[in-house]
Length: 303
Image (cartoon, rainbow, N blue to C red; front, side):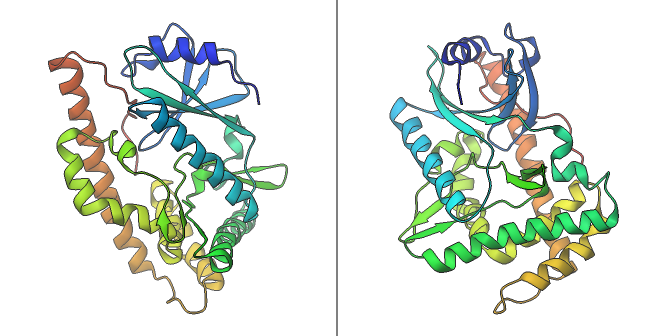
């Protein structure tokens, strides 16, 4: 995959993260994560760029990129199909070092959180089961490879696309995996997306919980089911739970609707508060301190 390094440097140098649509270089925001934003930039109509402006220096960005490449290789080893991708480091004068992860741009309607609104019940059931079976590959890999290697995964519907009959996993930008039981991803750069006054609280009370949940088979499946509230298809939750319990490892307790509901309410509250604090932080940074706020925040999210 070819990446125009000069274009990305120009884009990063002149980007206004508060008003990205006003950039001198055309940019279309395709999506938002808790840390990164996803763009189509310039004439690269076949590429989606995920931007992570979270690094103090080139060495930190390079370490993250190496982790990313190893994580993707391990996912493929586990049998997970990924779109074509490439990472590159962008250092614009006066700004934090940014990592741009380029992925092949997939059709919007190929993403499974879109497909559950257009397909028949039978087709939706098939997709849900296929996703759960893809996720199951991670637990099989971990059982075979641990403690040498252990993979995490975020199985939400928006992280999967169905293209020409193949399910592709796209959420590779937070490369969490363990070697000999030790987490390989340094979480400190990720905390830069949080307001400064919240970081010690997140570090002390939430960081381990958030990172560990993506290694926990039951919690990954509960998160998948709970996400159907956000995707405006709560009617599919009983079906999803039924499929999950058919494929859950035998030694684990079955997932229940009450667990899914409780998880969703807590998760919604946490992320709603977090986004509100980030908006306050952006206002303080741009209006009071007159500094560039590096992160692009979404508008109102329907949950």
